[in-house]
Image (cartoon, rainbow, N blue to C red):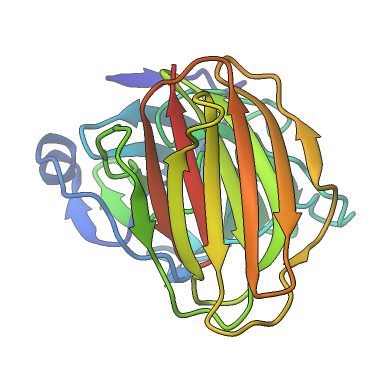
Length: 296
């Protein structure tokens, strides 16, 4: 499914390969896996490309945003970074915990309304916004549900740039005890986040450091609707927590979170739920995150 917005709405892009319009439009691709910045060169002189529109669509393994141009495609850089107003530096918030920034260079003008905001609501792609235009540069941002793999496609006939962002790998829900990780020398929780998703609530622990502590996740026996997340470091250094240790979540299943630290290198995170349902756990790198999804 593709949705095209009129020139008064906005534009964005997808992954890095070169293909003709027909080949890229009909053949579905695997989910992208790269998370490092992607840079591409222009196919036309810097005074020719004009940004004329933006489209987005949902595929089996990824979501796509397409920026339409006339006169060829400009140079670009796509990377995980905050979006800010061009010329002002003012932060521009995007829906979702991960911001994918797109910089086009060599675009003298556009017929797109750069103040428009698009909210596709796809599995990964949540929002598209612009940071403005100045001296041939145009900034755009994609608000994503998580930091996932992406790719950029430079397409022709007509000229356009597409940015694909991967869907998160589907993992089953269950009630069996989860065990994983185990190499971190210190338990250090930098932030706690939560959000409502179709079919489940999500709890995210942002962990400091590249390695995971030993992680166990299970419902407790004394309180059958309470999920215990146990974190154990490789050493006995006291666990650290930045921010409050008691949080009211108030979602469909996730209600409250309490963090308790100990002097022996361990910490307990108690997630109180409204009803005992299945959960799933993901250990995600770059940045290091522990994700617990609780089924509705």
